[in-house]
Length: 148
Image 1 (cartoon, rainbow, N blue to C red):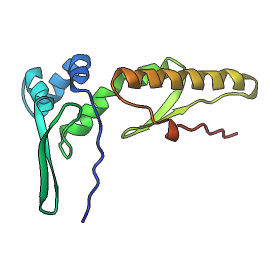
Image 2: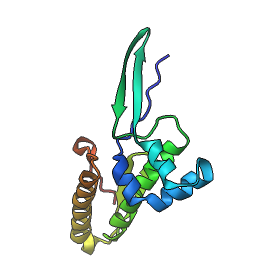
Image 3: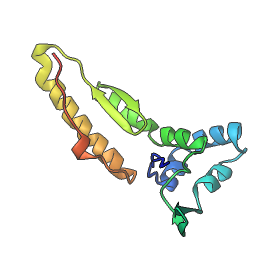
């Protein structure tokens, strides 16, 4: 049976630099007592791919969190934590599920143009934020939906 895993391409040095105190807290509770342990958890890793009896690798992983690990989702959440502050700075709300983010703006009819402007500016800023962390905003999946 084939099982497809979600792969988050996270730049480990950015995560380590931006979230060292959070990594320390996570690692202290779950794995170790220092940030260096959290760093070694993310750095100098390799992966082997196997289909039936054919095997490749090992391949060095520079931009990923170990899949199937307990810390993987926590590391991804911490990697994206300041995205919430960015969205909130546009006076918008958001919903997140794994690597999907929905921006939400609620407005009165006279303020529709300014709300659309906020959504557009926020989307551009989110794209810049993604790029600064070596992530890519999937423009094919970026949609605008109006309910009213």
